[in-house]
Image 1 (cartoon, helix red, strand yellow):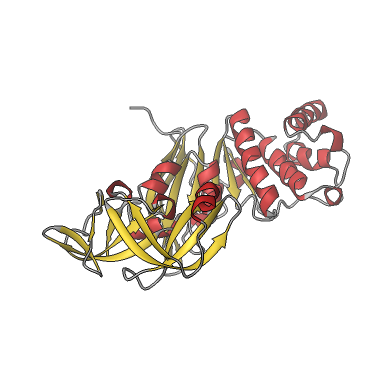
Image 2 (cartoon, rainbow, N blue to C red; image 1 turned 30 degrees about the vertical axis):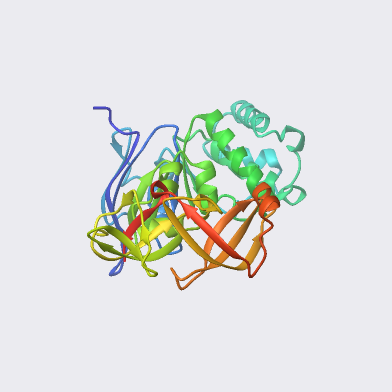
Length: 353
């Protein structure tokens, strides 16, 4: 059996009597882009800081290539951490910022210059090597901070909300840039984020955390399409939840109509439950295994698509259906319009209430 590249083994963290990380066990592959996803207080940043050595673990072990690093100080771990704030030295040039860590290791000047020049080429900032941080754009400062972390050639790079300081458009561009650099360097990236879209776009695998524990780990498509709990279904993207009752003949909605579902989670086979379906899985004016009728109460325009908020008898809150621009051009939805929605059993999940 091949040993995992990075193994987190039943790791716990207590702050006084408060358990911030609750016995997390996780294996991360070499050259993987891994995302720890969760809301504030979920334990994701504490786990990242334990990997970096800035927090002592209260129990368990952390191993890289089979060797424990749990007792090593941060500067002796084959790990580097890139902070959200970037923490660039304002009085130093781009090249000096990148090479600072290498100089602290007392490497020969020629080697420092060669490695700095090499990584400046990779991040495409060679022409700005003499500038100070305040002369750079947000995206350029982000790349300098990344280069400073990568130039030391760590086995693992930890990223704490790396794109949090950027505006939405630049953030989208840098998501792909970070992924490109990760593939080019072949280094394991572990990123902490609360942004679901960011995790789905960038990560090879995602771990959802809640109350210090792992809820679900898997590739982005599985996390989105096959949530294993109501929390995971609700946390990632938009999800409609319809109250249902489980009976001998399946599930029935409030209005007495039946709800067909392929994905039935443990504990949802009897009594009160909720059926869940994504807005993009709902079709307008088409026959399907599941069907509802309602009134359009609001329309949210997103350019590429519309989100229709539909009042129905099946739920206390509007059902949301996503309509692409070409479908909208055909149907011309209006507020107050009566509308029929349908969707398939294979796109329906049922969770315990």
